Each structure stands twice: as C-alpha cells, then as structure tokens.
Length: 427
Image (cartoon, rainbow, N blue to C red; front, side, top):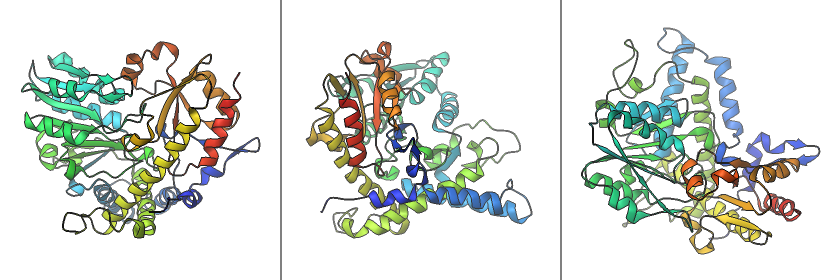
C-alpha cells in the first residue's frame, strides 16, 4: 500500500490556521485534548439554534433533543462496535464516570476482595479503585519493564487470582504511548470470574476499537480526545448496566443506560459528538479503497458494514499514518544532544505504541522545554499529566516529570521539523 497522506483533512480543523506573532501554531498537546473538526462546531451551533431544550417535553425542541441523544448513542455504539445504543452511557468526563461506576461496583464487593491496577495508568483509572480500600478491598498494582515502559505481563498474570473481582488497565498509556495487550488481560480476568475495566481514552484517537471482539465488560473514553467536545463515554455490557446498583435521583428512569446518567446531559456536546463521528466516517469512506482487504474474517466476509466499517477504516488509516509520524519524530529526537526518550523507540515495534512520546533533556527542566517550544508557537505538555504512577516509578516526578509530545492525524513532518529545529538550538 502506498504511504498514506492525511494532510488534506487539516482543512476541517479551523484552529490549525491560528497564528501567534506570524507563526503558525503547532499542536503537540493532543494527548490532553485534540482540536475539533468543523463538523463538531457546526453541529453544536445548530443544536443551540434549533433544539435547545431539556428532555421529556411535549414540544418540538424537546423532541429534537431526544433525537440528538439517540443519535449520539447510536454513533458511539458504531464507533466502539457495541451490542447496541443501550450499552452506551454519557457523562461529563472519563474520571467522573469511573468514580461513579467504581462506587457502584464497590457496593457489591466484600472485605478481602481484590482489584488489580497498574503503575502505567492515568490516575483516573487508579484513584477510583484505591478509594474502595475503605471497604476493605485489597488493591494489587502491576509493575512495568522500565527500559521500554511496557507492562510486566508476568506480574499481571500473577496478581490475577480467585480473589480478583476487577482488573483496571489502560488500552494505551497517556505518558509513554504504550499499547497494552488488553485482549489477553481481559481473558485472564474472565478466567477467574473478574470484570475488566478498560481505559481507552488514549487509544480512541489513534486506532479502531471493538468492544465485542475484546469481550470487555466496560470500556471508557472521552470525545475531546478524539476531535470532539468535552464528554465522557462508558461502554458497558447490558447485563452489567442492568444489574449493578446505580446512584440516581428517585424520579430518574430505572432503565439502562439512563439510570447511570445523573442529571441533565450535555446536549450540545452530544450533538457535537455526532458531528465528529460524521467526520470520521467521511474519512473512512474516502480511504475505503486502500483498505478493501481489511476487517474481514477467515472466509473473506466483512466484519463490519456501513458506518461501522467506515469508522474502522478511518481509525486504521490514522494509525498507519501516525506510525510514520512516530518513526520520523523518534529518528529526529535521537539526534538531539543530551536527550533521553522513554518507552518504545525501536522502529520495528511502533505497532506497540500510539504517537505519544515523553522525553527529557539534560540541563533543562520539562517546564523550561515547554516554555521554549511555546515561544515558537509549538504547544506541548510538561509535568506528569496525571500519570503519577509511572512518573514515580521512573524517578521523574521529583524532577518535574517529562516533556510530552503527542501527535494526531492532522500533524505533519513539517511541524516535526519545526520542533526538532527548536530543540536543536538549546545550549
């Protein structure tokens, strides 16, 4: 297959034309939140103009809001390949939703039950489970191989046992970019009767997800990390959404998924979510010829149809393009004097990471590096980005964390060259 070129899709992101002192802004802060597609902006504006109301009313705008919610559930069910819209729950963000579900799941646990977490995860997939220690729940923490920041799978396997009730693990690290073998971990969890809670916030912008193929019990993501508005999304198997005790106000519906959605939803955000799914499906349709061989079973039959296939093609195209960006960035960083790059750097292993890279440069704090880049209109994060466990494990927390460079499908090698030139000028 010829090298992919997704640069034409930059035209759908108005913010990419922003300049500071005549310099075009470069967004390498994507792991903390991507830029939004114009379809998102248009959909949110259209909602406010023609459908702004609460649900359950007898009037037109209320009906239209109900349609927006239904369309958003259907769109996310296709994006994640859920069993249906009834398995999609919305909330303000992944962290809030995880705390809500951890409280509900914790109500069913007993003293001595165990939950497995990892040092690699964002603290939003650790702290909600640590909170259950007050109920007598035991937390087991899985280590990493520090030389390439990959999960120690032997340690993971040893910590999953007959007392394990839930395994919480990230699909991809928001710090090192490592993609974890969640399919294997889910299988280990189910073998002992445990649930699997998958944090897919960092994988969702970079590759296709199929919750049914994974057999995930729960999977969470946030649409502002994949080119949309600030929303959190939980996929949950229908039996779990029906059976776990939900904390809700008394008049609210007892039916899933509504019983998990406390208070009024972000209706304009849900309209924007439909917009981003429309954007991604458009990419899939336009790239479909290049992926005619993909997403088929052993007999050659397509695993997905319609919008589901368009979305899988789009995300696979992004993953392929971004691997080229990762290889280009990592090759350039190797030439920077005094730099240390953490995580997977072998060009032959780029399929095991998303395009998020953390690094440090001798003689400079991560904040100094971020400020240097910002002065050249290049946006990047410094600190721990709430990946507290791995920063402590690597001894970086007391040094201010690390500089994080995170790319998306709208980034280019020209932007990487600007970054490298800036870093090369360091004293």
